[in-house]
Structure formats: structure tokens, C-alpha cells
Amino acid sequence: MRRFRRVPACGGGWFWPRRRNGRPARLIARVLPLVLPLVLPLVLVALLAAGCAEKWAKPGASEPEFRAMAAQCDAYAFERWPPLLREQVMFPARWIPPFSQCGPHGRCVFYPGYFEPPHTMVVDDNLGRRNQDRRACYVANGWTLVDD
Image (cartoon, rainbow, N blue to C red; front, side, top):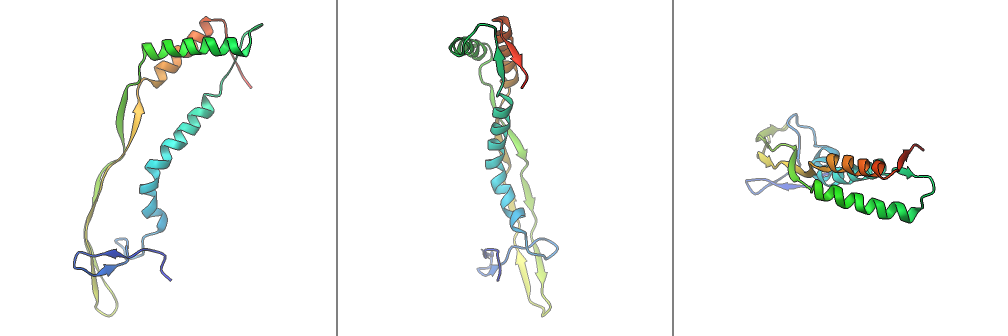
């Protein structure tokens, strides 16, 4: 039983996707370029969220006081360093050249070449500066970073 989908060929026939060396393309190799641009931003957000789980302390201060001060510091940092978004290429575009493969009985199959578009991701160039200003504002208001 074949696990790969059949793909229409240029001549109207069908072929099973294969690598240049003739072996069937693995599912991971075919799906990874499609899934990675969708999953990578989620993984980065999860890592950033884990890194942003900071604990700040100030003797005699309460949680609502911290939240009010944090909102002011965040607004100041966003005003000073607004988001500067740009599209970054994660994987460049490439051309997969055509090739043909002949079986043991002299039957040859042509695999057409195809173009893989670039995989991109949107990044914020001011994120580091904004976080630096936010933390400096916390320290200026008397809060200290607590290690867990």
C-alpha cells in the first residue's frame, strides 16, 4: 500500500512523487516545508512567552500596583519604540529541476520540475529595544527582578 498521493504529470498521466535518486519522497520531507512556516511562529511565541514570564518584586507593593505601573511602562516603551515589522525569508525560493526515471522493464516516467516559493515570517525589529525600555522603567519605579 502506497502512503503517498498521486500527482498529475504534465503529459496527463500520474506518477508517485519521488526523489532524484528514485526513492519515494518521505512524508516528513514533503510536509515539513509546508508546516514549518506555520508552526515556527507558534514555537517562537511560546518560547518568548516562557521567557517573558518574569517576576518583579517591590517591598510593600501589591499586584494591582504592579499592573498599573506595568501598563504605564508598556505604553511608554510602545510610544518610544513602535512596532517595526518586516518580512524575513526563512527558506529561500528554489527550483527543483525535472528528471526522468526508467524502471526495469524500460518504462520511463518523467517528473516535471517545479518552483518552491520562499517561506517568510514577519518579525518586529524593535521588540528587543522595547523590552529593554520596559525593564528599565520597572527598575526606575523601584521594582527588582526576582529569580525563581
